[in-house]
Image: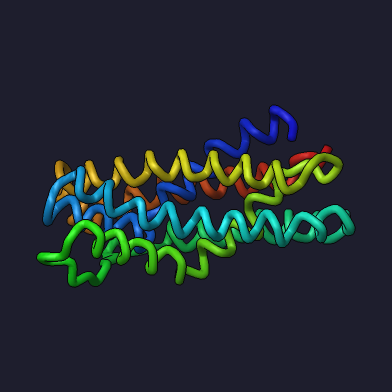
Amino acid sequence: MTLMKLLLFIPACFALNMTPGPNNLLSMTNAQRYNIRVACYAGLGRLLAFAGLIILTALGLATVLYASEKLFLIIKVVGGVYLLVLAFQLWRADGATQVSTQSGGKSRFALAQQEFFLAAGNPKAILIFTAFLPQFVDPAGDVTTQLLYLGALFLVLECGAIFLYAFFGRVLGHWFARPEKQRWFNRVCATLLGSAGVGLLFVSRD
């Protein structure tokens, strides 16, 4: 893995981590109803689900990527296009995204379970690990190790996203409740994702 790919991976990955999806909105909700510590604890369920998906991705894609350079290129293009599509959808979002949750009165373990199942059943998360992470892998090296390393870095950045959304939910909940403010935040993420998507389409695989 080249330094250029790693420097491109970190901001692109963090933009994905910060995308206002179901789990991040759930962190905001938990922080509003309880506190930041409870929301972060519940986020452990999400990290566990993502870790399992990352391991499955690393073990399942290693042999395939070693065997087919053309398939590696296809996965790279699909991942870049996915980022552009996600950026377009975020840009057009009306800022009225909501998350439905019945978390009132639940234990911390129950809240973590809720995060786990929400993350494990999210098809976008599966697509991220199967189409996004492999783009930054050097097929001439140890693919499995590289995917696990990138996955670990993804989880570290996800921890940051969990905390930030919990903070937003506790301190800035009323600000983000306004559709125009959420729309502004969506467009910042859309710009980051779109820039990353264009960069990935042109980055060298060597």
